[in-house]
Amino acid sequence: MTPALAPVRVATRGSLLATTQSEQIAVALRSLLGRQVELVEVRTHGDTDQQTPLTSFAGVGVFVTAVREALLRDEADVAVHSLKDLPTSASPGLRLAAVPVRADARDVLVARDGATLASLPVGARVGTGSPRRASQLLAIRPDLEIVAVRGNVDTRLRKVSDGQLDAVVLAHAGLARLDRLDAVSEVLEPDQMLPAPGQGALAVECREVETDLALLDALRVLDDVASRVAVTAERSLLATLEAGCSAPVGALATVTEIGGEVLVHLTGTVVSVDGRTQVRKSVTGAAGDAVAVGRELALDLLAATATGLRPVRGSAS
Image (spheres, one colour):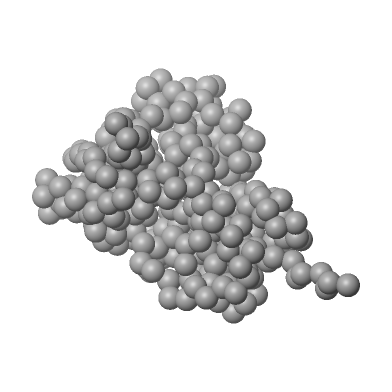
């Protein structure tokens, strides 16, 4: 009798959103492998410290380091992250095995009484923990009072429902995965607010040397070429700007086929913290040159950016 294969262990943060999106990957792996797949919850520094603003953490990877370490210690076989949380530098011993089909990358406004960004009262208090969102909000509505918030999705939504805030800005993808899109009062289009590089996408990592060939085959099936190309261009821009996810940098890439050629179109922005100055540019190139496309746009942005507006290193948002 053939012995049963050990369950595939999926390392994940312990938040409801993290476990929900990791379970989506687990369901796919169960179907592809015909094996048991179990979640391994890992507490990260970003989860245990809910009071410190993300911009105050030294370095990046506050939400991924502990999960990656569990994978390297062979406490898990794969790790699932929100791709926007991944540092742009390579992690020795690990590889990005799959970028599944990306969810909606846009941001959304959740406001009391269904208000839109335009209809919020003068001086409205809007919560976000992201300098990228804050700066772009102020570029549109300089009268707003931006309030730094942290915590899970329910915590942030509660701050609106109980009247502490007039609105919060969240990721469409996160609310969709939690089946909470009913709370959205407005979807913010990219011409209003560019998302964080990699927003809406998941990253599935495995060890660089993986001997489970069936698992590797399953991860290849989960990998979506267009999603990987898009986030590769966005992250190349971020890496070239030498900015963490909490810097006021937004980017969004789309992949299209024109005349038999697959192209990636990338738009990026750098915004001053007060929202008064914003540089936005776009570039298009071959999908196979996604890294070069991101680098080209980053250099264009830097060339057009005043010294005081340049992004600085920051922790993941």
